[in-house]
Length: 237
Image (tube, rainbow, N blue to C red; front, side, top):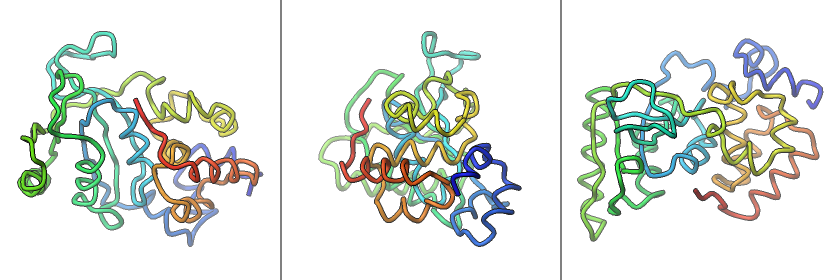
């Protein structure tokens, strides 16, 4: 398995179908029904880890949306908001499942400036209806007013490379370097998305073992990720 590592990290879909024809997690790489969810929930590093290692999620990318400035950057954000794009297979993980993770993993009642506000950017009428319904349900749970905006998606600008899969790049550099993935390719890497979540404990040991064949890690790095998961959640912004 280790000899295939550098090939696998290219994330080429055809190679996955050759080497892992019966691997169920690879279904996210071949689905013709792939959809995208876009959420804002404060700093985008933690959502990138949280959603990236969920079963059924193929890719994640952090960036800026919800504003009018053309080509925003982190240093010149304008009226945009930090957000995450999530490519997912609805046959494996539903939009409702993603919404539950959204609500459970940030406090939607805390006011922030526009950069870090809480928002759901819907891409079609179905997502709009599901987001609105879920918000109404959560309003019965939270004591304070929910400030989450529900807005139509317009355009998403990828954040700078150093923001993508931030924890994997900056806190687990030896593992990251072993993958042979260039920072500019992180937005398209399923393997990086999953590892970025696992190394900060954003999913279970069982989920990691399910994904092990896809990840193609050496025994050394498999043990390393298991050690990180055993520590529990470590993600923060």
